[in-house]
Length: 241
Image 1 (tube, rainbow, N blue to C red):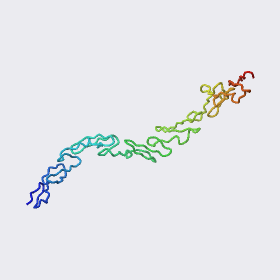
Image 2 (image 1 turned 45 degrees about the vertical axis):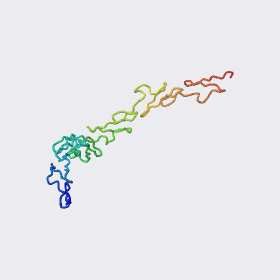
Image 3 (image 1 turned 135 degrees about the vertical axis):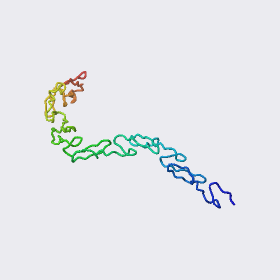
Image 4 (image 1 turned 30 degrees about the vertical axis):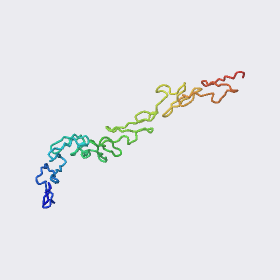
């Protein structure tokens, strides 16, 4: 007769003895039979040889609580304290702020995190689309950009260069509002939305900023050297010429 092997029974030692009959697995663990031994398959909340040690989910990586939530370990589990705008057991659910929103008729509510935005239909503005948009009447002139105050619905015009006033309809006289914009003694003449400069002799350019090079056409003859002056030139002749 064969000698019995530990963990087996039967006439020919062919039967693996069920070691789980008197197992010590706790907290809902599943006993897994081995050979002359057993092991405990623990649920996620428990660990240890017999599943008697509580798992601290707050020390696991990644954090059990998402989106900045604060994790607090409990016996047989954990709970999350969510930041504003998030909810759910692990703070993964964005609270629908549009559920209680008061966007006015015709607008579309866009849910954000702990806030919402009302997308207004044409002609309406304001945080809740409850104000008539003053820009609808195109009050800004001269191609100015119209902006609406979201608090009171009033318009403001971003005037282009050369114009001012509440609707940008007033021409700016650049010739009198400050120092002469024309350089080197040029005469300033106001125009609609701009100005022109009548330059003194010897100067050119939009602001008379450029000195005319009278030597540019090489007026001196017989290899003489040309010296540019203001509105004039001088020729230095070669020796013997």
